[in-house]
Length: 194
Image (cartoon, rainbow, N blue to C red; front, side, top):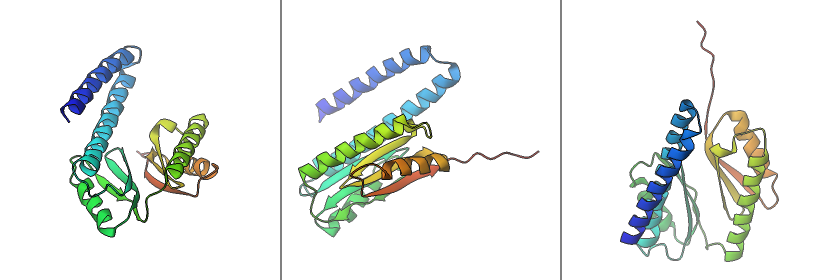
């Protein structure tokens, strides 16, 4: 555990140094935005790491489960399978007890865990969806997180409604995708009348 903490601290220092180098090449407005985005991203990763430790290392209650944890902008998504209903409820309690978690989306199903082959297929689907989002000129792919679990694609992010719909359309048209679940916050731009 101590080695993990040291590695995480070293990663933060390295990323901090890289951020400084990147910001020199950008305008001051972009630098402020980049630092804010990087801070949010690191916080999301830290929240996910805390949840992973609490679920997989601090207890053996989920040894027979398949749980995917993802965090975006402080919102945590739990997906996967647990054999018992009490495990799903316990996951919810653990996730909600983690500091800085704004909302928990517990979409874990009570069923047998998916096979290794299904998980490899899910990873392939995620890669294909991400590639489509990056190639699209209809949305900002950096604002979308893609998670696939048992053929279901979960999309997390903060986008205008039309970009969110474009992301859903691209994901649903991808081979192997059985369904798409949106976990979006929507940006709206309004014009203030004087």
